[in-house]
Length: 194
Image (cartoon, rainbow, N blue to C red; front, side, top):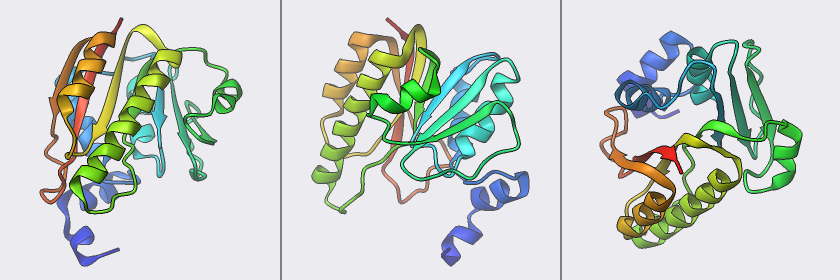
């Protein structure tokens, strides 16, 4: 952990509140602004490790809902009974058969490709990943459901937004305050899946 990380106010706040990562505050701000997740929802979090999104989601959905996370690496278990985690490739249908929920009300993705530092390369990889997340939405998101997709700069965002607008009634870009100033990332908030 670098000195930079430990002095970061969001890192400190996450530690104090018992969250596993500072990224939780990005989701919190988006949730406050857009009301993406509702009580009782089944929410799928793609690339969920270390699990701070799941911790936050579980509080919103309550005992009638569920926060389901998939990641290639094992996520340390949680005491909350409404959080379930699975090890697997988010683009492999086998893992979804194991989960057993046919459709989710919300899908969140904080996924980012391995970055090279070359904007157009990283942006292209981010675009590919976002389009794959859209495929997951096609298969596992309920009609009228919502999605959250992280994107990196370096590609023509209009193409991706155009694809998303064919599938969702509303697509808005959001850059929460908790994103580091040095990061170019932002999120696409996609509401009401058609």
